[in-house]
Image 1 (cartoon, rainbow, N blue to C red):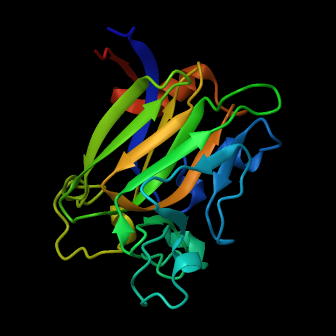
Image 2: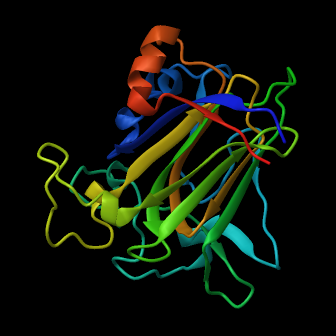
Amino acid sequence: MGAGEAATLFGPSLYFSERDSPWFSGIVDNAGNGIWLEDFEDGELNTPNVQAVTRFGDEASTFRSSFNNPGPTAIWGVDGDDGALNGSGYGGDVWIVTTNAGGPRDQMIFQFLPDSQGRLPTYVGFVIARFSGGNSSAEVDWLDADGKTIHDDFYRTRDWALDPVTQEPMEGLFGGDARLHRFVGIYHEDGIAELHLEKVNQLDHLQYGYSIPELSKGLLLLLAGLRCVVTRRRN
């Protein structure tokens, strides 16, 4: 039996632009010690010390890099990435994995590499933009340098189709509606080596790094909310 490991969790929380990230102050102050934000709008995964890992001959890329003429509502990216906060992100770009036959794959793996100081990121988060099915449960696993799970969780879009104020169901939400996008993230002081996702086929705004300059530890725990500290033991 492996030892339990404490983690601070963030989200799932509404996300319309990078300003909605609980780590925004670290993003804007990033000089290598803050939080890197990869929004995929240049068509690549090219922020430092992270790489996509694929299996079975799959290809990982942005949607627009794989498909030159996507349909007008095919991409369900972060709202603000297309230049306007208007409730959809159809004009932006997202990260996907495709099979060797060209179809969508609902599995993603990101591997984080030590930086020049030998550090793994202690913060890792992202926006779930599209599940592989409307009511599917997506599984998210964060792993440490030894390949052990720090924390895993399940998320369902049907649990998110609620008015953020009244918590009443919102009728008529459709794919790409920005109110369905959620940020989820984790802080783990010993570092995060890998992020594994199942049944997610569009991901946006990957965020990872080492510090949030303007947040004290006390405020960090407050922002994490009721789910802030989780101890998980796994066989």
